[in-house]
Length: 104
Image (cartoon, rainbow, N blue to C red; front, side):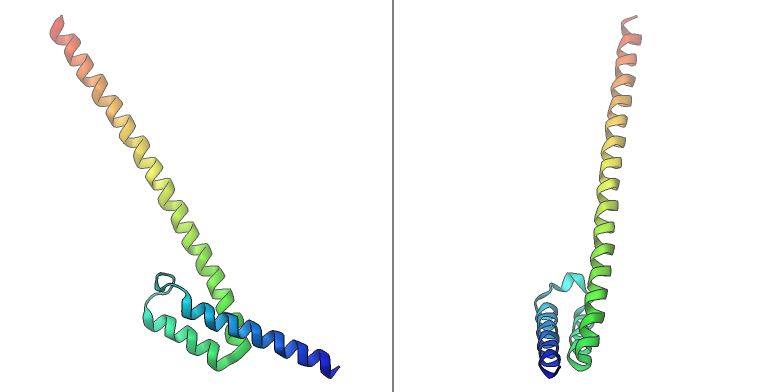
């Protein structure tokens, strides 16, 4: 039983160390600012496994939010491109009708 508990502790320690390293090397754009990144480092360092688990949950939620923002911006870009195409077609039709009106 003690061996199992020792293995569990070592696994928790490895998980904790990975999350500390992850916070250190994660780009600042994923955080609100440098203070926010420092706060996550302190939370993980001080609260050990609980802080590391909390950080993993936050990081996954943040990635989902950022991916949704990217999807929305891609949709907006496509809508703007379609709108531009429609405007160009309307302008072309207008000038064609003006040219036909002048020739008559």
